[in-house]
Length: 359
Image (tube, rainbow, N blue to C red; front, side, top):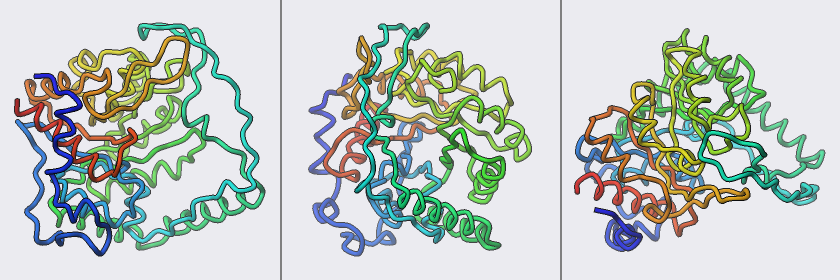
């Protein structure tokens, strides 16, 4: 059965209590303790969510939201983990007074089948960049100094153990830590990420990163014996990005503790077949990210993020593949399209997956 947007949207009005859809914080319709433990395993397939889905909400509201939606699996963002552990939360820098980045028209790239690239692709993140003022730079430096000092405190790992207990008590399996690692990350911070993962008791780390960083991560992953999964995107023109199957193959060669966090939305947008990749590399996959995107258009640009069922991503074939082969890794919802409310939208995504798996 193919699920249309109409099927996908049916859940919006009925899945959650009205009071829940309208409330936040202290006004939750029910307490977490009064609810049954969540269970989002359908036909043997674990559906979860990355906490990034709830990025517009305070970290303290993530567990109650997941419990009410019925999600029993979380891929916890490192900033959310640290916020729940009491880390200093920097103020979001204002762009007031910042010098706007000069916008350049994106360079066109030829249409591709995923096997070649002769141009350059600009990502949405690049369009959002801005040049901070000296005051903003100083504020960023101060915030970084505060978090670095907090991470070095003697009781930080004990605080993180308390975060794991919060999820355990709610019946939510904290299986993955998402710790993104940019090109300038220090070896000391990479080691901190693995100590954090060890303390939280996760099975793997997922990470938006680069090939060069993955090479540096490999010996540290070997040391801790914790798998680090490179998170894929759709920029096939940059050899440092995890986008092509060949790039994933390259990082997998660095260590048996290097894996793949396959984002099937980005992989589809880049022109590749998620089902074929999963069948081939299923034993090296830490987890999937579920989102629905359209193919990147001819001439350049990026395919849109859309509600589940409206894009080109083979979400249902992927879920059926997982059901058929009983793959042990989770498929985690990553809500990125423009919706009304993250709780409502993630609930819709979960229902879409449940309907697909139980059909």
